[in-house]
Length: 168
Image 1 (cartoon, rainbow, N blue to C red):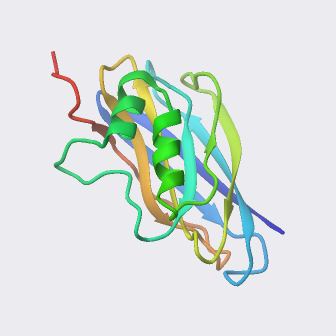
Image 2 (cartoon, one colour):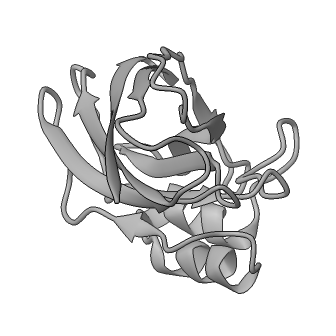
């Protein structure tokens, strides 16, 4: 089984979060299953991330749609940091490989590494976590192509408001 490296670097200013993502495939290519290593570094000055949920999935899956309220599982994650309902929703879709969640908070300046199983069928990556202290904001990387070609990729990812609670 191949092992790939993937680093997500998160930075926030107010409620806009930039997440620089670097991806590189370390193995046999798209035709075989593999594991992608994900390192997430919190570059915010004052916001922690709750446990982070990550999963590889098909192109039919999206964590959210811009301009619309978040679904129940993502709203719960954005309000309380609880990953269980979103993980269950993803698993029941039949379009997602095993999800992985970190434990504890990721404080500013800290990093965490996890691995996500991928395959030719599950070739997209999504991850999300609540921003603390907020009432319903989250950072998310939604449907990023996994790099089976050993190329390095960098992406910027903003923070979002789930729309599930009044902004007071």
